[in-house]
Structure formats: C-alpha cells, structure tokens
Amino acid sequence: MTALSPTIDELTQRADACQRELLSAQVKLTTPPVSRLKLQHIEPTIKGDRVASACVTFSFTVDPTDCNTWGTIHGGCVFTVFNAAGKIAAAVVANGARGLVSTDLTTNYLAGVPAGSTVTVEMDCLRATRSIAFLRGSIRDASGALCYICVQNVGFEL
Image (cartoon, rainbow, N blue to C red; front, side, top):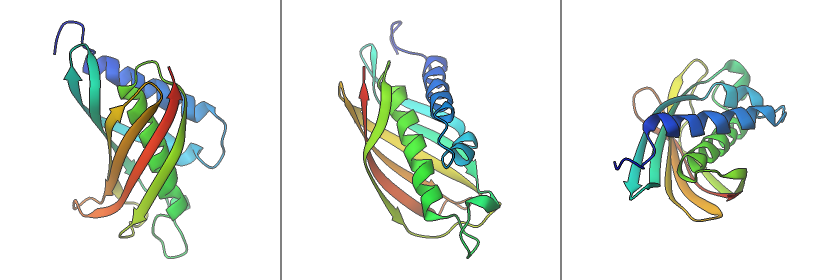
C-alpha cells in the first residue's frame, strides 16, 4: 500500500461506523441480528490511493429467536444479515458513503443452519462507483459448507 492508502484500522473504523448507523436506525426487526455481526477480517484491493474492492468477513451466532419452526435460521434473518453486511462492506470501499440502501438483494437458500451455530458471513464488494456498490456474499456453517448466497447492489451518496 502507498502512504496515502487507507490502513486496515481506517477500513475497520468505516465498517464500525456503518454498523453503528444501522443499529441507530431504530428498525426493530434488524437490530438483534445486526448487533451480533462481528467483524473478523477486511481484505482490501488497493489501486493507487483508494480501495478498489474488498472482502469483508464477519462471524454471526444464530440465536433461537432467529429461527423458524424447524429450528434453523429464518429466511428473513438471513436476508437481514446479508443486507447489513453488504451495506458495511460497501461503506468500507466507498469512503464517505452516506444513506446506504439496498437497491437489489437476491438471496439463495441452500441449507439450513440450526440455533447455536456460529457462521461465517463473507461479503465481497466487487466494485463501487460514485453512487452504487456491487456485491456478492455467502454464509458458511462451522464446517465450511455453503448455506446461503446472495448478490446485492447498494446505493449511496458521497
């Protein structure tokens, strides 16, 4: 990285600030899962003095309140986790992004994850323009098996 490139600490601060903003939105449905997303790792791709893309990894422990009647994570909770993680990843890449909103989020449900499981949520922000970020994501169980995938676009203002 060049001297002007953002450091991992600066990228982590961007992610933390975005998560705090999401939590303060007072959307009752999104608060519990979003508050349990734990940032694990940021792997940026630097071009010149900017972050061109980044893979942002979180861990998340499935609570019984996140589950459906079969005892596996509810589809709405999966969607909420992807929604929040995607916005955080977009904020990491698009420095100064405000008013983040998912303009498209397609989720595929491949396998259920039971309560008590800790999963890995990985969001790849593939590219960000001046107003939209393009992402893909996955959720894997503790054994590394792919359980959910998504494609997401996040709009924002700079």
